[in-house]
Image 1 (tube, rainbow, N blue to C red):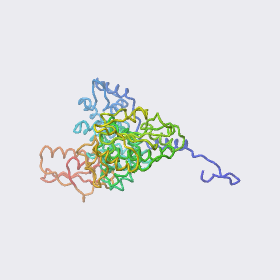
Image 2 (tube, rainbow, N blue to C red):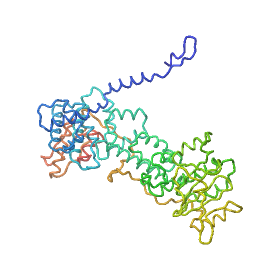
Image 3 (cartoon, helix red, strand yellow):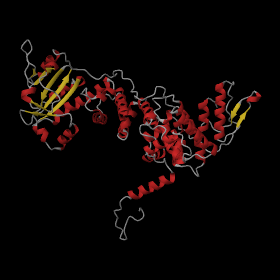
Image 4 (cartoon, rainbow, N blue to C red):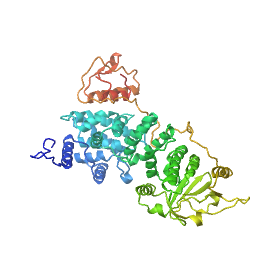
Length: 556
């Protein structure tokens, strides 16, 4: 189309991008690449598992495929098949036949992989059958790979991210998930059947949280927009990542500066931090919540004394005055008068839309007047935008109105005079030199201006994900080595050192090493009968074979 974008007279042609053609090309490419097969229907999986439980003979290849996909299904009273020892042993015996025949069915192997990802490993971290399933996948994978006429998208993805079969899985996936291109993320989704609720994603998120916690302040702030875009696509993990970002921002040197993206996203997801009923704010520590409260308080004050100034009668000195208390304000609520409620100017429409659940309406009095309720300590104070109005102060126990009410009446509810024992009422009058008199008025009530955000913030510890396993440690941030598959060439120059002693554990290691060498077609050198050592002639310790040998206890 780039060659033929003009007609015969040289006039530019308006040719739309061929989206449908691209979709069809992507579909054909995926078929050719043979990505992850679709998950079979649940009932079919349950039915096949029931036939295996009944001991039916001659189960078909299709039955076994359904069984491999259903190992972590909840089968009611029967429980989960992976926890049924007799049934799971039968599945492992069947996969052993794959190895003997050197014939590993792709759909059946992907079923095992899906079950591996679906198991609740955090609830059962030492579950033996799940670990056996991982060994089975590693044992059968080289056979499956060697049967491919050429590497497929999914096989390349598994080679690139071979750490998913180790005790520190998912670290390499973090780079694709958070920093990869759209194409890379699509390839990952199409290649591997990883359920959204999988323990593997939880590991990936935990690594990213650790990464964010260790970034410099400037790098972290620069990363916030990308992270917010990410959590909008992964709602299951949004709370954990949002709590991490808010906490990390509170630890940074930027904490006194309001961050509009974090403020807007946290309000949209968690609700108003000023309300104790917003339960998800309990995910973060109190200084973090206090930081966000200051953001809202400052913005509300600025809106009230600038945008909501009625007919231009506002004394802006009051904005300067109340900003001195911004770090102590724990609640704010703006009450819009009739003019502000009906004003169709873009600024007003945007304010109402952005604060739709945070403002109320003010009735009684002049149309241009607006009200502002703020809480400092155990006192509520009510200001009005129009000049000629006093500020009213109420102790919480004597408050004559409900601050969160949708509608409040200026004269009947907000302007209630209350006198103390000396006959002094609860008003601050905005007259000559009113600021110093207001300071004295507030000091008598235990309120003093001047609290500032400390240059050294209150001790705020790093956020730890609720699903974070305590043993999880990120490996060094280095390029991930890809595993080799297919025949290996022996290299006598690179040998595995001997396994000393012949204890039962040593015999088990040697037996496992022999089986791994057989599956991967790698030579061994056994000098144990001569009083020597046992060697696996592996060409590269960074292959999948080398890592698996290290996992079982051998050293390079």
